Image (cartoon, rainbow, N blue to C red; front, top):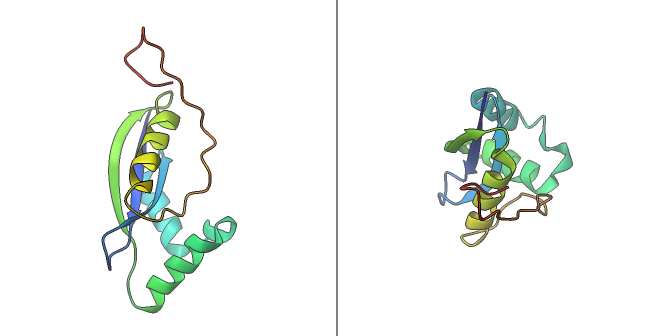
Length: 107
């Protein structure tokens, strides 16, 4: 089964605010929109509620599809990339990545 790396984008300025991974992208998008999963991330909760108060919602973009094994490293790479461009609501990365030169993929 494939995992999807996705981004939530602010519709006002088109800046990526969150990167995540899931097996079921649309279910995950609707859970973000409802705010039920944001209790542990107050800044993200406030952002989504602020959008909702203005009649807007985050945009949902699938960035990549990958195997379960590749997904933690893929998510971490996208988080590092988008941190250069704006304020992500992702917490500190919990994924350690090392490169095995005999393999094509990050682990």
